[in-house]
Image (tube, rainbow, N blue to C red):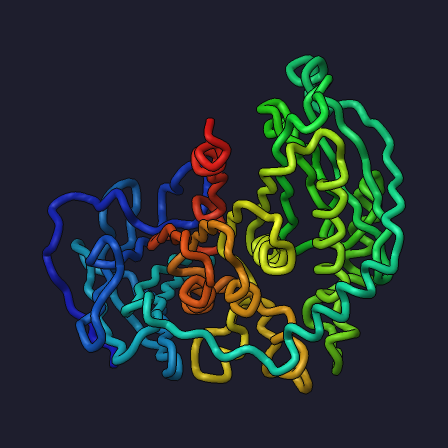
Length: 420
């Protein structure tokens, strides 16, 4: 059910309007936000969004907008809306735990906002049979491959700020599967044995080189930025583009009928080997092993903590691929939106963020954007609720999609974990 009404709720512009992530707000924009700032409601309670068109910091009336309301467990509803000189209320409801999202468009302009209903009660779909035995078998395979390391020192990209304090290495480590671990290791210059915590950052979706994690190294950490696909880090832009448009095009949706054939099997094997590499460094303090990533990178961070008990802290920004079978139960589909493809219901669950989260005992910090169409909020909350850690927190971003503040650096939390 969707209801549209006009209410003179504000006599000035709301600063919290959800806008496309940009350095500056455009002069003409659409605004959508939840009436309740925290955007969390009870089952059956009216869920109210405010919609407006803003031009030169004034509400503009008489403009026809296209609206689309997406609710977990329901078919999307499309309807028109005409703006007024005050925000227009759009209300709906949801009868059980889940999320709703309102999308508003006018030509190339768009805005969206989301709201949750008892998100702490969203339950992930049960694990696929054989999940643990699958990963135990692959652990044995990984152990059979000698972790040969190729390490080449490179010049820190920012000089002189980091040049005297940090060393950088382009690293490849042999791994089970088709590709090696590939990344950039940064470390404090002159670091003594057993003196440094380790920090590993995993990449989100896309095809790109690893970058130099200089800031963390300057703070005294061994920092490893891991390429998602095991690619060399010194290819040309044209080479990465050719890979993205060629063999790695739509890699997450390439049809496979066995978990053995999925690109994510090798990706997560490389995650485990990357952690082994960090723990092999003589400078590692043997205590702190932090994993961090956003979207696909957050999925890798969850897998890292599930499969390696030495992980001491996890930051999962808007994790992708969580509770993918929730789509089959009627919830909004998370990236890569592939569970309904032929055979994928037998493949995707072996690489599911909620399944990995169930097996985590280390402290975990999640973030979630309520209007995220990739790491959908229902899927993220399903993983958070399933997470086995007794020290877990989730930071809600009601006005965020799959960009901006939801990709939180967690610097203060990481430094607190390190006791600094």
